[in-house]
Amino acid sequence: MINPITALALYILDIYSWIVIAAVIVQWLIVFRVINVSNQIVRSIVGFLFAITEPVFRLVRRVVPAFGGIDISPVLVLIAIWFIRYVIVWATVSYYMG
Image (cartoon, one colour):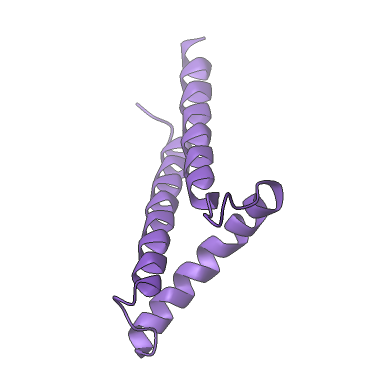
Protein backbone atom coordinates (compact mmCIF):
# COMPACT_ATOMS: atom_id res chain seq x y z
CA MET A 1 0.00 0.00 0.00
CA ILE A 2 1.30 3.43 -0.94
CA ASN A 3 1.52 6.44 1.35
CA PRO A 4 -1.29 8.96 0.58
CA ILE A 5 1.14 11.87 0.42
CA THR A 6 3.32 9.97 -2.03
CA ALA A 7 0.27 9.12 -4.12
CA LEU A 8 -0.81 12.77 -4.14
CA ALA A 9 2.66 13.92 -5.21
CA LEU A 10 2.71 11.36 -8.02
CA TYR A 11 -0.76 12.39 -9.21
CA ILE A 12 0.23 16.06 -9.22
CA LEU A 13 3.32 15.24 -11.27
CA ASP A 14 1.19 13.20 -13.69
CA ILE A 15 -1.27 16.04 -14.11
CA TYR A 16 1.53 18.54 -14.69
CA SER A 17 3.08 16.22 -17.29
CA TRP A 18 -0.19 16.22 -19.22
CA ILE A 19 -0.43 20.00 -18.89
CA VAL A 20 3.08 20.35 -20.37
CA ILE A 21 2.14 18.07 -23.27
CA ALA A 22 -1.09 20.00 -23.85
CA ALA A 23 0.79 23.31 -23.81
CA VAL A 24 3.24 22.07 -26.43
CA ILE A 25 0.47 20.74 -28.67
CA VAL A 26 -1.51 23.98 -28.36
CA GLN A 27 1.59 26.03 -29.22
CA TRP A 28 2.14 23.92 -32.34
CA LEU A 29 -1.50 24.31 -33.33
CA ILE A 30 -1.20 28.09 -32.93
CA VAL A 31 2.05 28.25 -34.93
CA PHE A 32 0.56 26.19 -37.77
CA ARG A 33 -2.65 28.27 -37.60
CA VAL A 34 -4.87 25.30 -36.89
CA ILE A 35 -6.53 27.10 -33.99
CA ASN A 36 -7.30 30.78 -33.80
CA VAL A 37 -6.48 32.68 -30.62
CA SER A 38 -9.06 35.35 -31.40
CA ASN A 39 -11.70 32.95 -30.02
CA GLN A 40 -12.37 33.77 -26.35
CA ILE A 41 -12.45 30.12 -25.19
CA VAL A 42 -9.21 29.30 -27.00
CA ARG A 43 -7.59 32.45 -25.63
CA SER A 44 -8.52 31.53 -22.05
CA ILE A 45 -7.24 27.94 -22.48
CA VAL A 46 -3.99 29.21 -23.96
CA GLY A 47 -3.67 31.77 -21.17
CA PHE A 48 -4.18 29.09 -18.53
CA LEU A 49 -1.61 26.74 -20.11
CA PHE A 50 0.86 29.61 -20.51
CA ALA A 51 0.42 30.75 -16.89
CA ILE A 52 0.95 27.21 -15.57
CA THR A 53 3.90 26.18 -17.75
CA GLU A 54 5.81 29.30 -18.72
CA PRO A 55 7.42 30.00 -15.31
CA VAL A 56 8.92 26.51 -15.28
CA PHE A 57 9.94 26.69 -18.94
CA ARG A 58 11.57 30.07 -18.29
CA LEU A 59 13.70 28.59 -15.50
CA VAL A 60 14.87 25.83 -17.83
CA ARG A 61 15.57 28.30 -20.66
CA ARG A 62 17.88 30.29 -18.37
CA VAL A 63 20.09 27.22 -18.03
CA VAL A 64 19.69 25.62 -21.46
CA PRO A 65 19.07 27.93 -24.43
CA ALA A 66 17.21 26.86 -27.57
CA PHE A 67 19.17 24.72 -30.02
CA GLY A 68 18.94 26.14 -33.52
CA GLY A 69 15.67 27.87 -32.74
CA ILE A 70 14.09 24.75 -31.23
CA ASP A 71 12.92 25.12 -27.65
CA ILE A 72 13.72 21.93 -25.74
CA SER A 73 12.54 23.21 -22.37
CA PRO A 74 9.32 21.11 -22.41
CA VAL A 75 11.33 17.96 -23.03
CA LEU A 76 13.69 18.81 -20.19
CA VAL A 77 10.74 19.55 -17.89
CA LEU A 78 9.21 16.15 -18.73
CA ILE A 79 12.54 14.44 -18.04
CA ALA A 80 12.79 16.28 -14.72
CA ILE A 81 9.25 15.19 -13.81
CA TRP A 82 10.14 11.59 -14.66
CA PHE A 83 13.25 11.83 -12.49
CA ILE A 84 11.34 13.35 -9.56
CA ARG A 85 8.71 10.59 -9.83
CA TYR A 86 11.47 7.97 -9.83
CA VAL A 87 13.10 9.53 -6.75
CA ILE A 88 9.77 9.68 -4.90
CA VAL A 89 9.01 6.03 -5.63
CA TRP A 90 12.57 4.97 -4.77
CA ALA A 91 12.50 6.88 -1.48
CA THR A 92 9.10 5.44 -0.57
CA VAL A 93 10.15 1.89 -1.33
CA SER A 94 13.45 2.36 0.51
CA TYR A 95 11.64 3.75 3.55
CA TYR A 96 9.18 0.90 3.76
CA MET A 97 11.65 -1.87 2.92
CA GLY A 98 14.10 -0.97 5.50
